[in-house]
Amino acid sequence: MISKLPRWMWFGGAVLAFIAGSINSVGFLGFQHQGVTHITGTTTLLGIAVAHGDGPQVVHLLGVVGSFFVGCVFSGFLIQDSTLKLGRRYGVSLVIESTFLFAAVPLLRQNNTLGDFLASCACGLQNGMVSTYSGAVLRTTHVSGMVTDLGIFVGQLLHGLKVDSRRARLYALLVTSFFGGAAVGAVGFVYFSYETLYFPAALTGCVGLAYGVFQHRRKLSHG
Image (cartoon, rainbow, N blue to C red; front, side, top):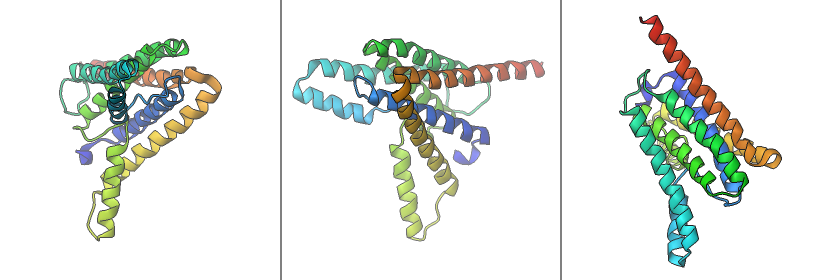
């Protein structure tokens, strides 16, 4: 429940949404012009490719969708349940995501589609992890559902109904953070090309390592 989310989760969610936005910008601006943080558009393109009999594109898009799914599987295996609880393997998940992003850069520089697959897998891992520790309330790699809910909230307000203002503020924060990350990723791509991914990769890795250190110290303090 959003009412039970700690304040650090708001900050963490915003950071992860920012990271996802920057990754997606690189995906769209790259050689395949392919979003990698969400599956709705990719599935649509897959249907179009099937209808047109475009075999290579079908294979590529299936790879992106499948990689995102594999990332979610990683998350489910590592986190294991839907309860927000210190001690879960969030740090490990973030470090793995960081590793995938670092590995994607040299592949993308060579126009190797495996780079898209690694980036998509990283985003699936992140989205599955956030869904897990928020009870499937949060999504940090796409904003369609949150924009939908915000629109519903505005409609309810116009009708004079009471809305969940806390949820509205959280969703507005995540959408804004994703947008900010997309803008920063686009600017970065102009100057650094695919190396722009090193920034979200490093940020994700640092957060994961910091969480691991925090957990280690917490265990020591509790004897």
